[in-house]
Image (tube, rainbow, N blue to C red):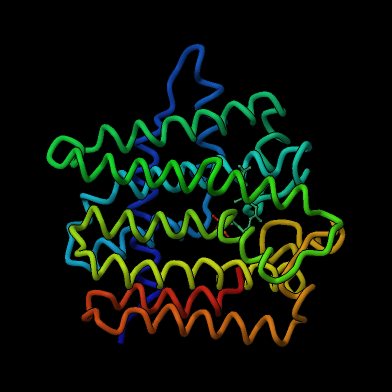
Length: 296
Ligand code: GRG
């Protein structure tokens, strides 16, 4: 029987060691910036996106080392998005991962810049990875897909649609479009990038694309459910905010019961996409269960 909890812990600590090395604490004029970056980057979190990248690399028989820099880049971009999302000009949150948000500790200007630096440095980490010398075309393709996922056609677009849609009722298709960008794009890039760097075939990429799209949407539906059902203490971030901000959510549109059913359907769809893979895809299969059952 596959032990997911142990796997998650091992992979998270591998990622954390690499992140600590990727963003070292310097002395001198940049020390405070490094501190602000490391405050948000190294303070926990589930590390789901980097773990998905590593698990996808493994699922196609790739070497973990070849996806490690990419995994770090994903978490750096994810952390930047959280820092910026928490700013007063966006969601204005004071709690993240159980601790005061970056701007509460370092001020708005430094928090903004720490996010900017994490985003920019993420691409440098990937471009300087050992694989970039051995397989530059593969890494260039991954950089292109990662920038599309994070940028104006992906996560940033999703955030804009979300902010502009506050207080206006969306239809289901519109909500799915929004989340496909805000949350789903980075999940998709994680899975496809990890698989590509691991040497995936075209057929494997196709199946993993179905897996990642279903998983990303499942993650978001559950995120919406947890915002209604879970406590602030449990989540380490304020809950109950979606309704207060007039956000469009799955529970708001479908109700709690149907949203939970939809999340289960998506998790099953993700797992089903892995039917042609062998036991090396066990972590990905287990992650499809974890995303829908998670309490954090
Ligand atoms: C500011 C450009 C920009 C984008 C922000 C991703 C995002 C867009 C905002 C984060 C806020 C949010 C609640 C997004 C929806 C779901 C989500 C991404 C939750 C946080 O991800 P987890 O649960 O967090 O993986 P941890 O802390 O475990 O890393």
